[in-house]
Image (cartoon, rainbow, N blue to C red):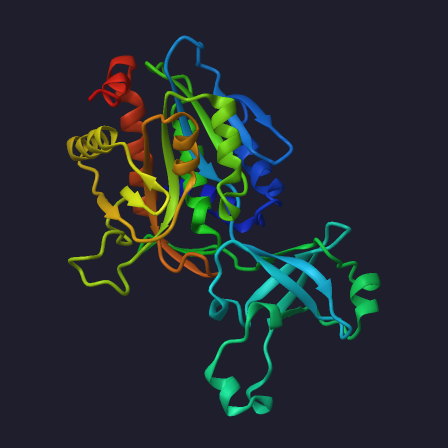
Length: 358
């Protein structure tokens, strides 16, 4: 348990929005050193192939994405404030007054805040609404455009990250922090590769840590082409619905175990593989839910679009995704790891072939 918490802490505390995933890749590389051959490309996709692979067995692609939602400097205003655009699907109300860090041209992390007008200066109408993203700014304490550019060394293209440190309540098994979408999936995938070390399977396994999921599943299109899988398991931090849906409709509950996603707006799971995973969970006594979502998307769509391989998504329930502040249960991560291991230890050539029969 302690090792898993430490792994999650290390992966969630590093900064890594879309296009700027280098520190996440560094952490992944450190945690998986010696487990196989690691390849990193110019998008910062990382692919780890187990050293036990022999190239003669069906290939399973594990996937998790390294990026999280963030911001990107668009321009510096005359008063020194930073005009930004969003990377990924933010709700504007979740941005105001958020603590951030800006990575400047020198690679230093400069603290800042998404600036808001004090209520003393707001009109009655302004108090009721939320400013548009185009009207928001990040304030690093500068008083002029020249100071921001020259002293703080911040200019167009500098990434901006939520600044939240991981916390763990051991008594409750509760985790609080940022970027649980999808660092929890990345942690689960890392732990799976660690626990499989030295074990012989009936499949070859390649773990793809895909970049730029939040801006169009871009990295997964690349990793799928490089790995050329026969089947795929996507590990994803997925939005919990237990704080606003009635119990009968809640399909992603924090503490309810991993979610097997049947459908979202980009993806339909292979039904045979989905049912196989559910049966494996039942046999192993692993709690889980199944979900049909009316929104969202994830890397399984990109992997499936490329080659049509049977694909499932194992989701880890996360409260308040696409905001800076997330809650999750350690037990859900651990059960996602257990389910993934159970599947990898059961899969073989004939079983995988059966998922494509009609």
